Image 1 (cartoon, helix red, strand yellow):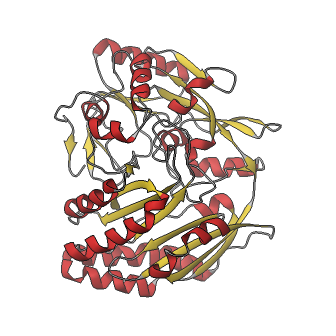
Image 2 (tube, rainbow, N blue to C red; image 1 turned 180 degrees about the vertical axis):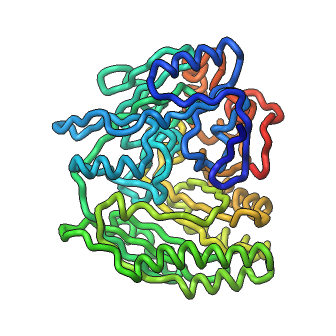
Length: 440
């Protein structure tokens, strides 16, 4: 059976599909993969743009491992099954009186997949979702269960928090939680030229701060969020109209127009900047963080040291103008606190994360390549789940703990069953991928 990711830019046909409902099945599947020399990867929601999960061997789903396992109310920590969708987790934690301190704007991923790739939200006082993970359990390449907590194998935590599934199959994660809380979010239109000089002030004053800049304009859609002691508000008709009709329906129609009539793309970006709505929301945090995304696109995202952010934005502007790129999707700018996670793009440095998008079916390679050159010039590190062109030698220069991770990976997976041919381009030998690749 052929599998494809959400964006539809890659597909693969695994020899074996395993849907796990009990942990014992994982050990059996790993032993089978070892015997038959089949690469094994875990498939979640398929929301990565880079083919991390693609395999011609064993494709494993943890969809049968769902939900909250246990909450330590004294420590405010919870054990969660790795296959739990973030959207489901938000509702379940809320019912128990808890929430996660920060989330990204997509909530359809499994929690194990989200932490494994360094998925993040925004707010300079917060790290990625992986920094909220204080423990985990995984089954390594020998078929052995490995427990990592503050009391057991704690030295493995910073390696395992972002591990791309290369140390083992993550079945449980232990998350740091906080009491459920209300967020109020304002969405306003502002000039990019005024946002850059005021960046430090915005990061300091707002709990969560991000903006979406429309190419070929000086307009940005700015989102600011703060906690509130007031009760949640039901979404108004205007909010629903903006979320459903403008941000999805109208964007889909305009994107289709750009694909069929490319010369109108710049005008469409300018129209979107004019039409973008200013809104206000106040609701429980897990409902405010997430945004429905119906229009499919391809994405590249890089983390750059935050002090380089103004220069990067300036060069991105200049490059888009120079190359006259036909792009109408806004460029997303978010901000994350530094961490100590070995393969985290924010390792050791407060970071600005800049994401570029292209509507599915439109030419993107030249545009992404140009943006990547700018990001790399400023020591950018790619988001693991999004498109990039880097290979092992280039990545090794970006991550101080690269060799330490490689040593641990070889120890946990001596037969390299978690390394597909594509993954070997990043973490080892480089060969031509055997997968059917449409755009990765």
